[in-house]
Length: 164
Ligand SMILES: [Fe+2]
Ligand SMILES: [Fe+2]
Image (cartoon, rainbow, N blue to C red; front, side, top):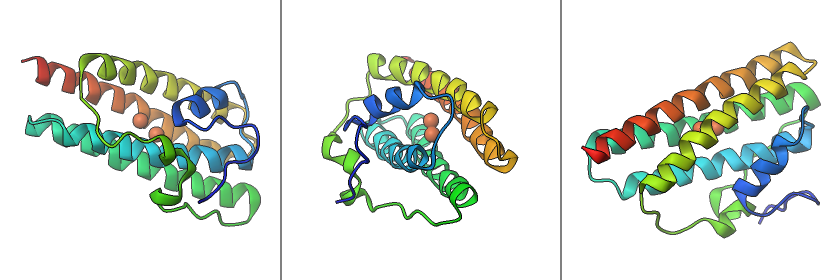
């Protein structure tokens, strides 16, 4: 099991909230964030599992795949900043998966929370990018942020599809 550096909350959403208090990310923060993004992938896949509407399922799956992409962008950012590779732990060894539900009902409350969370995610990625000295790293952070907004739009679409 990979371990979290000292001081980070053990639950993925709490750890993300904790990182939101930063204006600038350290390499260690990026490592934690990459593991949160992997949790995000699994979270979307779990939601997609419980959705019958094919279009909604595809949108949630797409979001999940892009969360994995965000983790990979963060690996590039880590390499640029530190010169060393960080390897993502497999999900079974990702510390955030200790609290990953085995099943997740895709209800309105969770969808609304995700729309808000994704919008906040974009905002905070832009803040981190604004404070990043390496412009290549900043670009990677901005790309992740922009996609979080798209995720929120897809989740809003899922809400409509499931209400119809
Ligand atoms: Fe993400
Ligand atoms: Fe997202």
